[in-house]
Amino acid sequence: MANLAQKQEIPAIFSSLSVARERLVSHWHVTSHSTGDVWDPLSEKLTVPLAGAWQKKSSSILARWSSAYDAYLNIQGEKITDRKRKGTAVLRILKELGSTAVILTKATVDDQIEWDVFCSMFEKIVSLAEDIAEVDQKSTEGRPTLCIDMALIGPLFAVSCRCRDPVIRRRAISVLRNYDRTEGVWNSFATYKAAQRVLDIEETGLQNITSCEDVPNWARISNVSLVFNPTERRATLSYSQPRDEYDVTKQMTEAIEW
Image 1 (cartoon, helix red, strand yellow):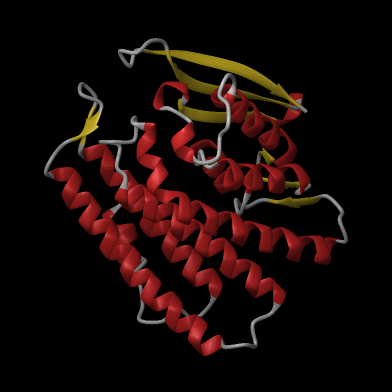
Image 2: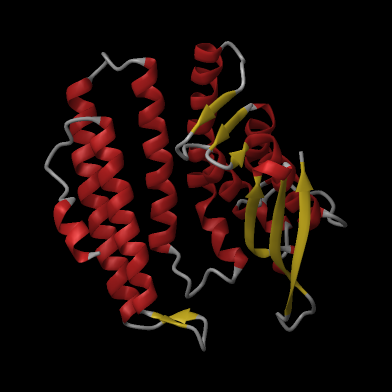
């Protein structure tokens, strides 16, 4: 992995969107891989101070990437095409999600309340996703689209599971519902159904939800994952749900069909 990082140095300015994406993804894989060296499976936490060292390294990478990316955008100016505008929005989404992972390590991720500080970031991601969907609707004239690369569906699912603000969360789910697209194995409609199911689980029995603070920690599920079986048009939704007030959780799985 170290050799990969050396080969993928971040320049002062990117030459294209594809190079910017390549560098972001490759470096993010490197820093994510490094968490395996500092993860303590017994305590299920990142060891300290190694967690801090990982955060410092990852923050430095994101800062250098952002500087090179901003320099590229400044040169492009207003001549950016719809295709490049979409690519720009996708990269911003990936960068924002990467930032949350850097700030909030696995040392605190089991406390779902910790995600609430990222509401403004989640709103920015949803707004970018809405822009992408609008561009795609124009270019495809509403026809279903297939893409081999992950761009939007996975990040929107992450937002819909982590953001408990009722307005932002429903905006994310709405994009999934109306965005007729497949990215790799990710199907937008199946992902919408899974995201809606997560919302229903957490909000059942709650009243007058106007902000994320109105969804208590005991109602929130964690470790949400979605595994697709495209040939059978079904997916498996897995999550951990609080069993009692002592933070004991139970593992749950459900089938999502489309």
